[in-house]
Length: 255
Image 1 (spheres, rainbow, N blue to C red):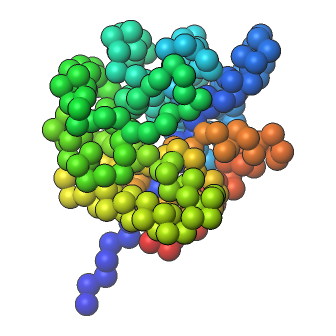
Image 2 (spheres, rainbow, N blue to C red):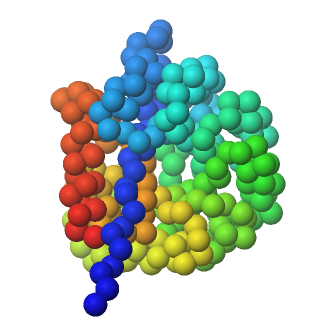
């Protein structure tokens, strides 16, 4: 009997937006997101994610430029709305990847996945132009089969599944909803692999939920930010990244 191949390695992308949130609360330059990035990489992060929002509420334009210069060969994932302004900035910075995300001025954080069905024609030119520039395009989507299939027609080689509904159900103790949402993630990840699309996941992940989702073999990257920065207040960023890396590895071993 032949043995099943082991699942691919699971990468950790650390989102440092909220280091900038703390800095901006008082102004000035401290704490510096670049310093946080270098600590995260030294502690086991495989990549760095930063979201340049329209209102610049946390990451600023010069942060993106400094991050790109500081991290060298470490992949930089530029989260961005599908707007001409953000496209121009991405083409100048040339990050490793650009993740197109929905954005509302009034939201505290990203509230859901892109409308890849209704927004198909709007998203195609952005995906095309970023791809021509050698920037790997990702779409932040709901964990739904139709969303994964729409991502393929848009031309994105990567999708990131919005795990927020599942994480909220877990935290709220709603076991029925949690089981339903986790199955949606599993099915969407499986469909992505069938279509040849690389699958990531993110939003709301903690040590415990990252450990569970790491066991889904089709998911190859987790992007985590708010929880890591929050926990770093108590134990330090290096320890938090190492602990998350260990939790992910434990979950992957169960795959």
